[in-house]
Image (tube, rainbow, N blue to C red; front, side):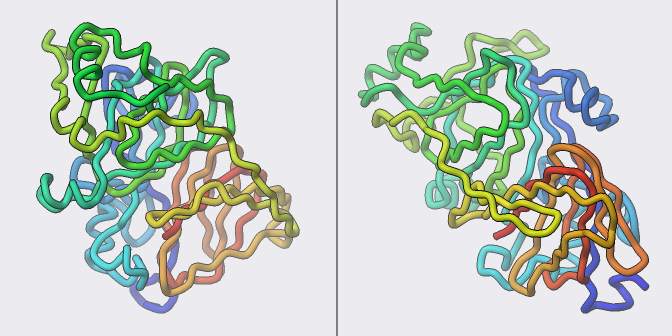
Length: 334
């Protein structure tokens, strides 16, 4: 039976992502994750998204071929009763392959976005580093307090780099990027990003690069300076992470904020009989992003096989589920 027959038994489904071919992207999302998206470069895959700029599509089951947006419009109860899930999916999950440095940028908060960007959400985000080259870095805020005039001058003459705080990154690092933080992902980083459901980015600096037509990519300096935090930032340090162990699985909390909660599951079960139980409540959905390994999500006589790079949407008030395999997953909810 399907979830259309048993409305109380809300079943999970695998998603197919939308792709983005931004000029700084590489080939890893196709080569390492077998995304089979005909783009080169392939910079981002939007794994769990209802954003009109790149909605995800259901990969199988009764909703196969429909966008996640269409499914949630037909079944708003899949989002749950949490205040943040009332009108739309509040999050967006991406994989990001930075073959080159991303632009130096900043995102607005909800209040600014609602007032100046047609009611959009702002963009606070979290990065989980899936892999990183030995010399990979990210930009996180400024080394010292900045005056707007000094920053504008450094953007014009290309010397802004000396004011930016550059932080080395390693595999399994976690960074929380609050709206208003000037930031950039550096070349050589492979990132899983969990963010608010927004596509608002204000570019401050783009290294003088040009697009396919030979034109400089647009900057948004005035808007960026309206929302940017110009105070010096302490270097972000990795928090102490505590593993909670249960049979077949270890769990660690990576991030909890007003917009989302992210846990990492380290799954190590060889058989379904030793699997880990999972069931959402009526208040919120969950999304499962596999960052390594492979496994299966089982309910009744049905199952979804997943592997590194796959994303599964689990509706609110789900059927009782069992996870098994040898895999690492990010579990995202509200």
